[in-house]
Image (cartoon, rainbow, N blue to C red; front, side):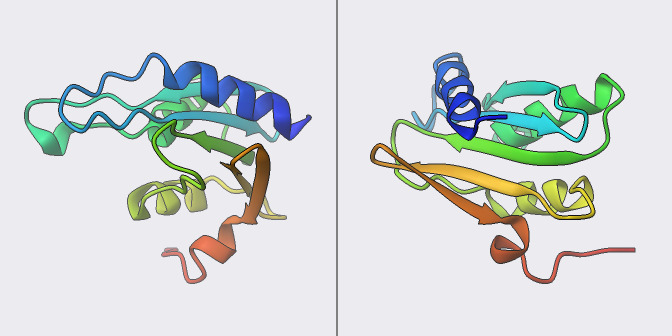
Length: 127
């Protein structure tokens, strides 16, 4: 899968974010181990702790479809270059990464930046 296409889908879904409090929309696009694509955007709640990040929204949809492994995830916010996952999302991605790891794709200007998840979360929690 072309990572540019994953980013395009993350950009498009970010437009659906529900962010009346932070005004910080985020879109995410997951590529599963079986090359299926899942998108999600963040949505906020007046009880702030109930807010859901775009990454976990997309991963939840992936799980509901029966997939369990993430090859890559593209993350985008129009408010920030190089929008990487928060700590909670990094751990969730970690739990579903493939054996060879997961690529995390962000955008800086017009260029893609690709991290391995282990760069962003070097000592992820495991049972």
